[in-house]
Figure (cartoon, rainbow, N blue to C red):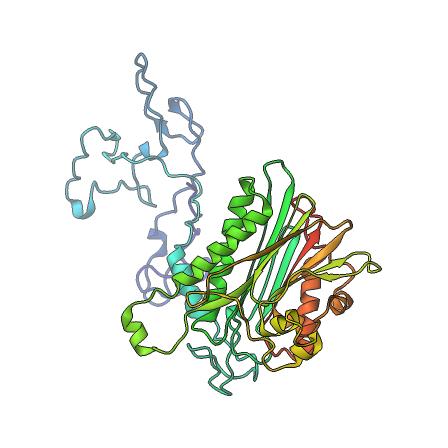
Length: 449
């Protein structure tokens, strides 16, 4: 290791530490004879490892260890040199002149200095130690800025999600959700009047056993008059999509797969009502969790729909010269009045009882009878799966075709955002959820442009 060069003359008097000037032979303060200061030792450059004998530095290296068969010779280390201080004087064997401790058995010892070398030579550079992730996380937590209200942009948000300044409730995670799954996309929004989003959706795509692609979407609408409707819609959508993916990958016919998936969703919602008796004592008049469900599958040239409740599926062809169509019939009071011939569709849906549903998923529902239907469109188009939060503002198939963007089949996420925006611009009286599936299903890997 290189040593720092020494000054030719001391900068301070060794006796009184008074500053000196260049060329002083005696200290002007105490008269100390500066000529008695020993000359600094010459600089020693970095040593080069070599063979035994005197090298260019004048150091007499110890002779190499005798070779033995099968055992490599011990390397010569720079630390094999006798230890000296900056003035060239030998260092004591141990602090305060005490004898050095004997090395452990088997540890190599330099015969010249008695210094232990039972550790590997130190590297020229030491790698930086990675920071402790726990320390980094703790620092991040302490430096995290407080949340600011989205309404007044000034007040802090408390742990309950309300602004301490204006009292405005902050957006929840489910207030606005977007997702793409291959060629399928969905958007859900709380709307402008409800305090939470009780809708839920699930989208996916997979491959059938014959290698053809399949796209699927599930949309659920929580029944607001029931207990925990947001949990019901989420449980139903997750159960349905899992059942659909598993069945389609095994080769089950899409219509049968959709029927079974709705039954699985119903069972998942029923399970939410299984609560301890003590909970019922506190809320004896609450209904069991409930929701509606609507789903669609696009696979092998088929368009399959299934539903229970009043959420809908619309078919909108790419060629807007061809007619659009509504593919589901509501389980609602209005639909029953129209089916019985007691009212026209306009009269029924203008009635305040129009949206009273006659079919739903939940423990207090009648026996669930999923509706399913299959179609074979003869042209390309897009499938719109939505809750009444959207179709309230575009009720007929013609109205839905007018508001959906022309490129919805190739940009489904953008189109879903446009449809949700249409409902919000119309008043946003309900939660709004829509999923879009291009028909026919494009190969896997395709998505929104």
